[in-house]
Image (cartoon, one colour):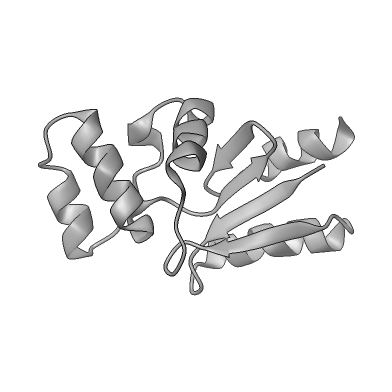
Length: 115
């Protein structure tokens, strides 16, 4: 199992995801979206696994970038904006190889631990 948790430092759901894997003794790698973000390939993989671009956009964010992304026409422009600003992505994003779950999804993570 190769777990990566992409999150924001002050996100409670990200902290809960980290606690979920710690409690089960599963090693994971934490990536701060605020400072590092996704590579193009990683983001493409997450979008595909999550079921589309709209599934990973943080619609609850009040930042200026989150407000503006709603008005971008086309998925290509939105994708580029997400690459540019990782804080616009709903967190946590938990990856297990080619699988990914966006948001707090303990049921999905539990299935991964039993595979």
